[in-house]
Structure formats: structure tokens, C-alpha cells
Image (cartoon, rainbow, N blue to C red; front, side, top):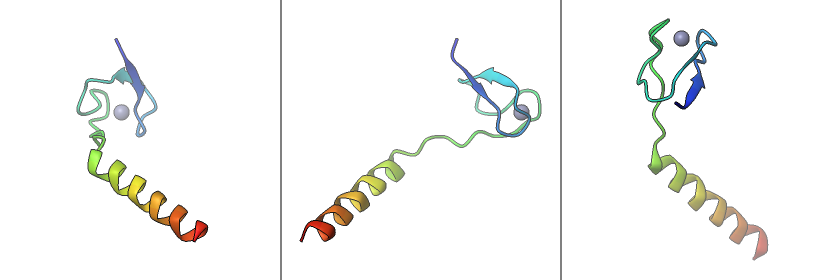
Length: 51
Ligand SMILES: [Zn+2]
């Protein structure tokens, strides 16, 4: 089982949990849109520095 550390109580909990079973902290789910936005911004930044 994949484990992850709760950022709120620092306990190792199952990564499949949507929220921490110990303290109830809701884990932020990874957003693919943010990843794409970051990639696009990096590409624009690189183009600006090269030109
Ligand atoms: Zn917790």
C-alpha cells in the first residue's frame, strides 16, 4: 500500500484516502490543469529568454 504523510498531523496514512482518518485533514488532489499551466508558463519564459 502506498503511504503518504499527512501535512496536518504528520502521520503516515493510506495515499488512497481523500482525507486524513486521524485528524480529518482533506488532502488536496493533484490538478492536471495546474501542471499544464506551469509547463506553458515555463515554455513562454524560455522563449522570452532565448529571443
Ligand atoms: Zn492528519
